[in-house]
Amino acid sequence: MFNSIRGILTEKRGDSVFILTGGVEWELFVPVTDAAALPAAGEEARIFTWLFHREDQMRIFGFQDETRRGTFLELLKVEGIGPKAAVKIMSGIGQEDLELALETEDLARLELVPGLGKKTAQKMILALKGKLAKPAPEPAALPWGELAEALAQMGYDRRAASEALAKADAALDAGILGTERERELFREAIVNLSGPRE
Image 1 (cartoon, rainbow, N blue to C red):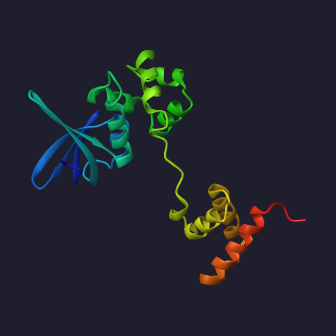
Image 2 (image 1 turned 180 degrees about the vertical axis):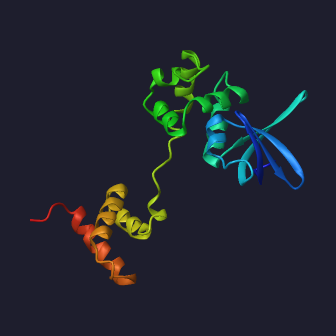
Image 3 (image 1 turned 90 degrees about the vertical axis):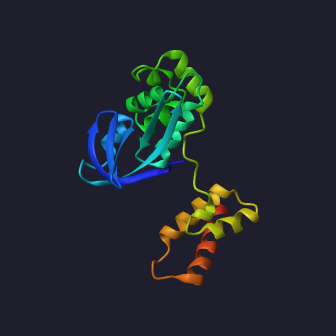
């Protein structure tokens, strides 16, 4: 299975782009929004792909990044939405707008997408709400992840602990580094989590 194609973009034609790699020029079908976000013709690009294959045809669909490809694959899970319809939907609404419309169940916004009727929009909300929105980063992914984990194990709310550490980090002198900085962050975070100072 192809994951991505890297090469020189040779042409853009609305909902398709052409990319030259290893002496082969590929035609990829892409959402218009993704095509616009890709570099200009003549420049190098990496396009994430998905191969559609059946007896009478084969097509490669392309996306500017993995998030967009993920959105496309989620749309395919909705009853009544095939590859062409998914690309058309993604061409008619940006990623952030689509995520917001699904999370807030904004049926009116979805119905503004060309070719998207009320019934399909309702199916999208039922199937995809909570699926596209990016989850909050885990504390371990943050610079003070281990400290947040330690505070959580002490009984503090994980999100509140991360916020307290972020606040302490912003207030702490930049010259304090290493173990000393971690110790001060931990102490200040506990003070912040314990309530307002008198």
